[in-house]
Image (tube, rainbow, N blue to C red; front, side, top):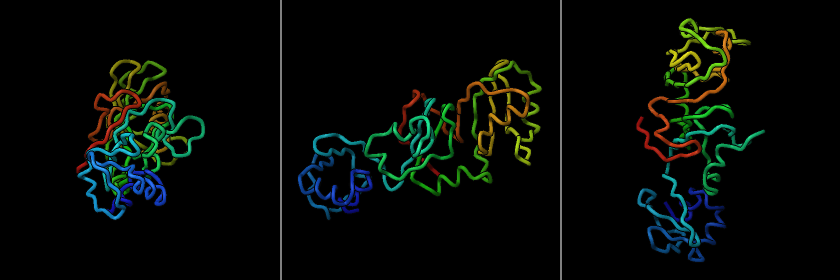
Length: 229
């Protein structure tokens, strides 16, 4: 990949802006100044990147995968309506890169959120036919018993929906804490299922998405991960 294209792929500016950085000796890769826009660089070989003296987070190319422990009061959207976007948690240059969340979490829902620029991966893990399980920790408004879990596993009919949906797994940690797994990704699905079963969600946290958990990341923390599929 040519240096100019590489800098653009890192979200460091337009073609003209990146050309200016190169011409003015602002680009330092692995400790060396790079000042030829046509120089060939292998993205996998880039360990450190500095622009005009400031260290910049190196984004894996051509595809990257991010594991985020989503905090509350952030919207899974590039155009948030009420709360900040989850994408505002990333460095400025990364927000210039085309990336999408893998599915969505409501603003008040916390936990595992994957973000990527790999559309094929995104489609695969969100497609209902692949049945990638999502595990939620649900804080219930009303104390519940095993009958709630049985109802969810047997299936409930969502309001304004003609399809019965089932929990892949459901059990209580205590009377007000439900652990529930689903394989679909319908709008507000967990909240609507619990409501249809006669209770209410007070708090919602996604513990796992497929094989991925928060890996002890604090709320708002994130990291690049490797994906094999």
